[in-house]
Image: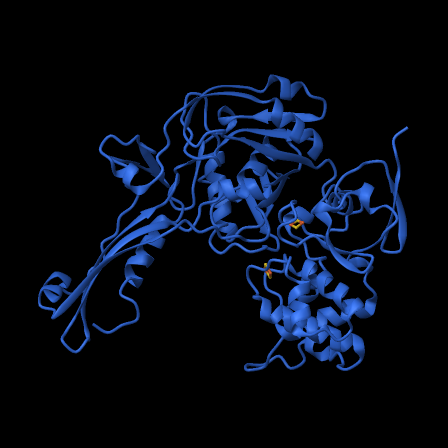
Length: 507
Ligand code: FES
Ligand code: FES
């Protein structure tokens, strides 16, 4: 007989025979979606809960180990604690995207239960395992301190602040979404479950094993035969196999015979009735590759015999043939820099390099899509609903009828430019349309890191001139961008780099 684990959660007992992470149990079985999943591996703190009055990351605690312990999620905090944190975080301006906030609140609440009047140092230590990418820790620290003061009775809640009675220019006001973000009931796409979408299935891509390799064959027969698998899609199932925010150079999936460009490339899309079957089925998709030498740097890409990353791309209607690996170029001129530098008393030339930079938004990419009228509706976490619609309509071959795709943006757990391209939205939409059922597509943290473009690595050489008194006279620079496998926003960002290269100075 399978072992049974009795779990005491928010004052009630629950029994399960499954040994899995408490995070998954809370979210999937009890639908306590205030507990956020930012990484599933103990690195981010978004999943923090209180266990025996201590803050614990629920993704690294199992149902087996949690037996006999007192578990509290935000839903189980006392009403007084909930109201204290809503008010304190609202007043401190401690909420932005909100994805980290329930975890921060739980870390703060656990501290306040043990230490009613915590010092700044104690608060800093209490949240040291919780990452916030957008608010900044200072305001969160102030929020926890104010919540502690309210809980001690040293500060009172002013209900007019949340109501916005003093709403006026110059007044400090609450964000309209403070309550739902602090208490975690605001919905990000991953918070939508079978309760919202009966028959919800789950999609995930099999991604390339090599950064650059020819896909020789894809055999999904074993995965398709697995009970619970809805189906497996490949490039052959995509009406128009290219998407992209400004330039359509991004294969929805790499077709048999084609060459991958990075580890984030999708080769097949598996759809299953539950997440467990999905992971098993992905392992059954057999892909044969011919590994090829990747192009790793600007130097390698510029070499005369460099393999071509793309032969051409589409820019909404027009095909642009490429002669080399240069995706975009910009030339910004103001005045005669060469003359100014030649006439300068002094010049200095220096080379600077910057690495790729990960956006590190706390919420991994996620979308839910469902058949809708004669097309699909997508609930997504992205930075532009209309851009997502345009890209998905393009994939379906519906450029002339983009209204067949409807996009509703849910709460977005950070983006910072990293969620401008479609990532999972088009995959969820494709599966929902093909199989006629609601589908969720959510990236793991690792998949997110592999997939989305990074801020471009740059290699720049600047020559700056000045007169004998040190006043700047001119600047010339060449900046090379590594945009990775796909164009994404390289054109506008390159232009920004050029126009900003002179800094805020008078020449
Ligand atoms: S630490 Fe648990 S989800 Fe990131
Ligand atoms: S508010 Fe903390 S990650 Fe966005």
